[in-house]
Image (tube, rainbow, N blue to C red; front, side):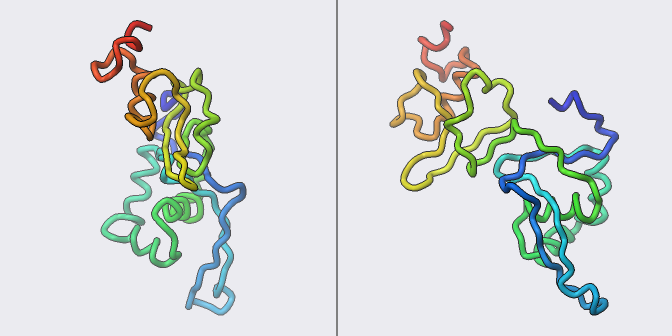
Length: 171
């Protein structure tokens, strides 16, 4: 996937977990017109992972290095993935490029079709309402041995590893 992107250009790749841009209000003591200024931006969900270009990472350094990233997060009072989106989209004006192949625990994993596993960038899992939100991978390890389906997913994608059952390695 990264072959399609030039590392010398600014890009921010990922997948949001919300259906519309986040709206926050910034408190400012500069002028009365800036108090409670509304800011709207997208952010890539950290649980799914995201990717920034080298060029963008270099532009972020003076703004985010040496504890400045944490200070920005403290100011807007949001977690690190939201802070990253705020920094990239709002401050640096680089839009999020949505890549559907990133998957977080906030989306239903069971709907990712096994024939598309090779095309995905990331997978996740979570326990929700006493059930595991995991990818459906049949015929590798049972649920007791592999409740999060990570071993099963690995063997589905790379069946010749020694941890995979011999019946899978023959495929």
